[in-house]
Image (cartoon, rainbow, N blue to C red; front, side, top):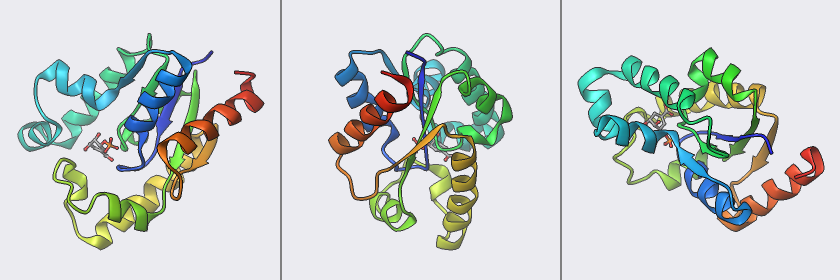
Length: 167
Ligand code: S3P
């Protein structure tokens, strides 16, 4: 089975779904944000605060390069901001977890851990719309998650993979 890359906006459930999917398929799993936190022994907000977004993006490129041995990879919402990441992920299967803007707003109401979410509603929406195009353009397929439970999303991925790739 090719590596599965889960992409999507902050709060779309990539990490939770990825972990559950890995358990169901008995595959290895890693989250690029967790890799970065462990590798640099710093939280994501601290990396943004101390070194800025561009350094974080560089760490993200390295994280993707260093995790190719894993079978299921949950990525950060901004992974599509760098072309080399998209190229690397194209070697595997890229799955976009699509979630409506309203649902993201609802899920991230109290979130303090995502520097790029700490902005005005209009900036949040601009980022969402820009990213949505990038996810759609680059994913091998899209799974709608807005009204689904984690298990329903996992089942939807498994059945799509069976149809498309003979999982
Ligand atoms: C980011 C998303 C975050 C994290 C960082 C930047 C983004 O990951 O990588 O805060 O640019 O969208 P999640 O998508 O897991 O929240």
